[in-house]
Amino acid sequence: MVRRNVVAIAAIVIVVSVTTIVVAGLIADRSAEAPASTTTTTSSTTTTTTTTTTTTTTTTTTTTARPDVERIAMELDRLGLEGQVREVLMFGAGGPEVELRIAEELGTTCVGGVFVAGTTGNWSPRGSIDAATDAVTAIATASAACPTPPLIATDAEAGSRVLKVPLTPLPSPATLETNHVADPGTTSIALAPAVEAFATELASIGVHVNFGVVADVDAELGTYMDRQGRSFGADPAVVAAITGTMVEGHCAAGVAAALKHFPNQGSTVEDPHRLDSFSTNDPDAWASFGALPYIETRAPLVMTGHIRYEGVDNGTPASLSGVITSWLRADLAYDGVIVTDDMHVMRGVGSDLTPAQRAIAALRAGADLALFVGVDDAADIVAGLVAEASVDAAFADRIAESAARVLRLKGALGLIPGASATWFDWCGAPGASD
Image 1 (tube, rainbow, N blue to C red):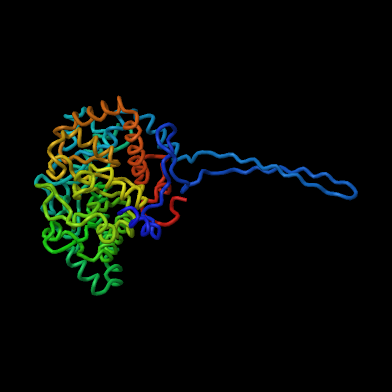
Image 2 (image 1 turned 90 degrees about the vertical axis):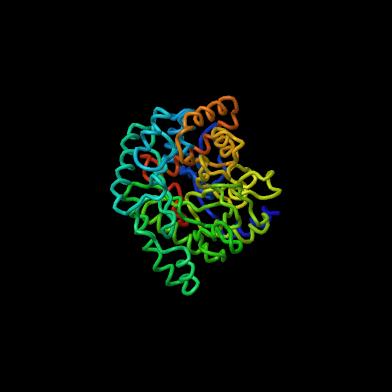
């Protein structure tokens, strides 16, 4: 089965090595990757006679919690249930004044994140960069009094097809694939500074997170991502190499990049914006094919798609499936932030659930951030999550766990004083979180 296949690969390359959040009573301590600081005090007593010398040594060990762990725990306590609920939600809308629309619905802009985009999707022409910057600045200003500022996210992929803020585009995915196949070394050397410059433009606008690194592997010609021209091809090793460079370039610019669309939108034919999207691969095929980019590329976030597998979790989309999420969390040992694809207008997530029920299902499945590119139902979503957590202690713990991961990412991005970037190995440097 998929778990046995993937674990064998994951034992070679660990996707993310990060310290697990320790929050008393809320979150279980799942690893010893970031050991607590230890102070050792040694006292010695020596007794001497004419014939024998005896030395007695007593060692006392005192363990203290890391300051950054305590900082996140303190932030969770300060937020309370409703604040934690808002922390696991990201809302957005096209065009300016998104902060006003969120505030009108919620009475606050204090949420986990805000997604920005142009009025009709891509924010163009390039001359509108000032408008995009002004929109992000307005969000930051409106959120100045929040316990923690929201993550500002957008979607800026290679090429120009999906570029929701005005930037100098990277080469198209097809060009990057062709160049890499022809000369992998030269392509990687040339791409790294180009991606860093691209991400630096994002940072200059005020963007913290880019949902723009496509890790989908085309299973065959004519799949949705192949028709869109948004993937880096059909060779998992090529896709993994390019996505790795993309993530590293963003990290160098101080921007967190997300891999998408887990497990693999490259194996679906239908457009998930319009229809249910079923994979043409079974889970075992995914484990030996579509999983490689997620094994070899360590990213601070992974976006789950609305991808369904016949016979897996009753055909539940990946974004709402605990079984499919476990391929990432358990089989690939991933402990970064899991964000859903948009659950506001994309029909692939299903129409049988209310927006609040979608958010609840996504969080129960293991997501940390539920993304809604729309604000119409924001108040109902928050109220629904609070109500569910108020009567279900396990779900309340699940929200606290996810809120802690979101706060950890914010700390790594410098948005929470006292929560250091070295604690969250978000740039993938081995040992950075030790």
